[in-house]
Length: 160
Image (tube, rainbow, N blue to C red; front, side):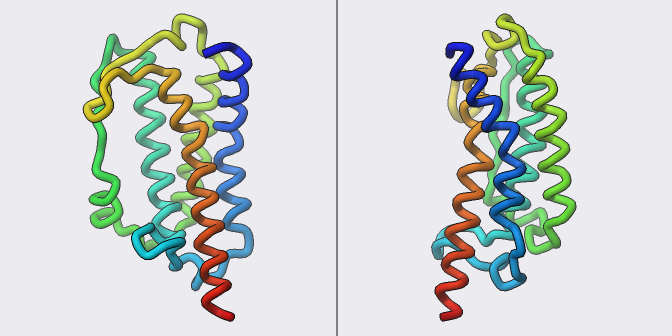
């Protein structure tokens, strides 16, 4: 990955929390509990997923940097949603998302060329590098913000 591409992804990563907050602006309770499609999570569940995923991703990057060829273990997102009370209020999860992103972005900004060459093995995907990590998480919040916007649009359509 060249410097320009990396810089773009880092900026996209940094903006992730903001785009989620924008997607949630003036959300109603009805919209929070709406799904973009029948087989997708509700907006509330998406926010909790983002927090859990972000905290997990923060540890993944730290392990890639601090350990020699770590095994990065996948997790069952659906089981998290079922067992971690994803029906609760979203404020603390938004704060967790913001804090994990902010602290991790500070680390990402300081990474050297050697740090960007580090890798481990993901239990589900195989080879997993710090660059792979950045590619995934630069888009993750943006993808879910778009899903939130689709769910809100669906909720508004259902009211008409």
